Image (cartoon, rainbow, N blue to C red; front, side, top):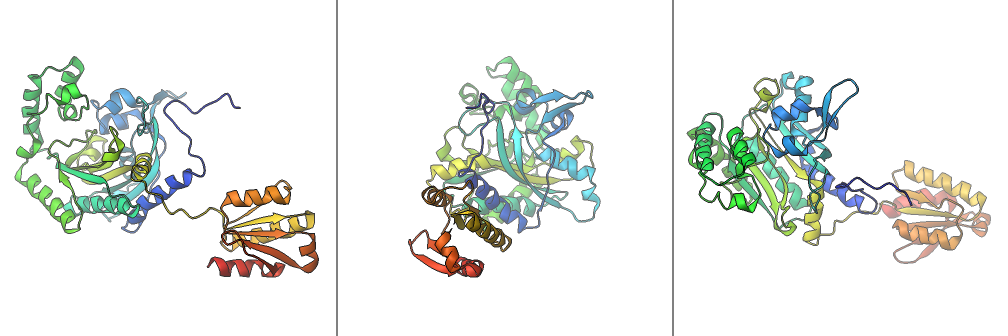
Length: 420
């Protein structure tokens, strides 16, 4: 027994359960690859300032949750708490926005790290699949991403999720709302830290999950009542486009995402079967983020969906994913000559695209057949001394139990035919 354990708030993904996580990632990514999004991968750590500027000085992520460290060279870095800011940094650094084909459409899959109080559905290390469309201000882009996320979840079989939708306005109308909200918040019985946050970014207070804060926000002014005509028209077009696509959503005038960079469209996917950690994903438009981190004006929109919470949502709905067995053929040699011959055939099967495994360690027939059962293989090849003398191998169908003798040289062709 090892004396080491996974760090608090983290977990290991192990077979066979890990196959479910891979299937979720694939289901989320598939519609993106089919819609012009290319894969992007950024480092697991970035300059602290990237998140301080982009995510926001007043957010819990920056003030409480980032893992920050200093390198031997004196650089202050942070483990990635979210990936939108790193993706935009990478696009700017590589000048992808200058290639003349805007928007730059990318998707990613990877781990994020936040120092939070561990509980079911909330970990210090978690996985997300995300998508970003960078460099275009178009309601159709916002609608496209919402539709693709909805498509991903429905492809997995999920039905009991809801899409919450709101608009956060822009630099024209949000300042007026900000002032009205600050006036309202100053009249509440809030602790000193929350009041300080209200002065920096009052929208963050609306996102406060504490019941003692939420009950005081019942009569808070709503941003939708302060939207300028341009933001109203933009939001209405987003609503019309996703409605026309058959995507059901709920207007939530109090929806505020937990990051400072959002403007206009904001949305969240929630699943009511997950208790307090009901958000399984979300995103929105972030038209000013590029300027925040030193780039040109690049209006953009994106989302991130939590792989961990999506798996929990599947479990809450009792959905079993149809995951094919990792092994189609399992080879059981009995003796050294059989071992040499079957190993060569397993290698040939793999080269031909057939998932095949082998009984290693010189196991006897009984132990080897147990291993074959555990592998989930549809077919087992058994080769003993008598079979060798006759130039055949026993092919057993593990579902029907039927066993057939076939020529050793016919193994690959026969299995390819049976497996389609």
